[in-house]
Image (cartoon, rainbow, N blue to C red; front, side, top):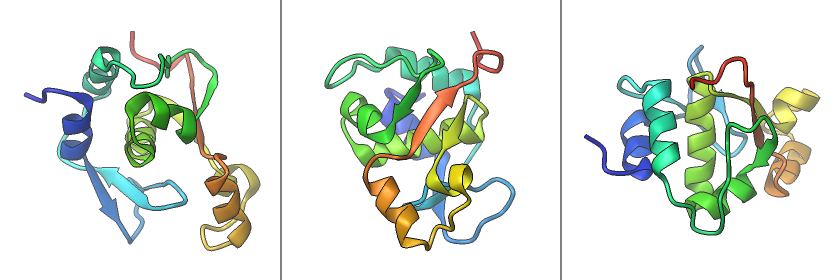
Length: 130
């Protein structure tokens, strides 16, 4: 139904301003899943995606920043959106200045740190679908 990873992301993510229990705070924006995305489907689209600037294994248990993922997917905005969708689906943990240091999204330090690349994901091998 979806030809590529970009289409899957576009079809299954909604940017929001009001947070609820399904919202993922990406520091720069908030999002939540839309439609009925499935972790296995997202993982399959990730596996089929050919990286723009090298390969990245998002499921290797290592930390990957949106800067690195942006190079792979071809766009930092899509990188952040993919990271948020995967977080919502339980594929990995999201690491941000907000959830790691307890800063608020409005805190200039959170924004500065995020701008420097301190928004990352780390897959948990015990939760990742094979």
